[in-house]
Length: 155
Image 1 (cartoon, helix red, strand yellow):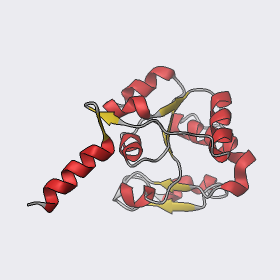
Image 2: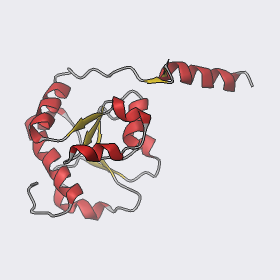
Image 3: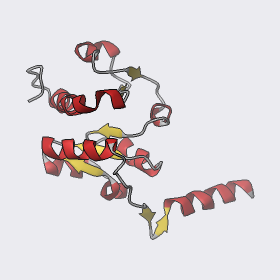
């Protein structure tokens, strides 16, 4: 439902996320990474909830200092998870999570209810979220990165 009577799906999900964060207000700073086509002015009604806006075109600059990255079905969630960060996909309908077209999807946390979101956030802010090791083709990501770096160094 959100809180602004918006009919826009993304706004409703964002508003429900903001509502769920209210119990943890002094424990986080919220940075909103804008899509390259978005303007800060589009989020004016949320200024009281957002600590920082990031419009940098390089998404990794925005997430490099994040403790948790939250989105809907963007593939940046997969890329973020590969960096070893907790990621959270919020989809109102469970099957929407399948829109993420990546083998990394299985390593993301997907939440479809407000109750599950509150449980997740409580665990997150209590340092009770543990990330599953990512394996690609039966190799750990760190092994793949080591191989790539070693190849580059020996060129």
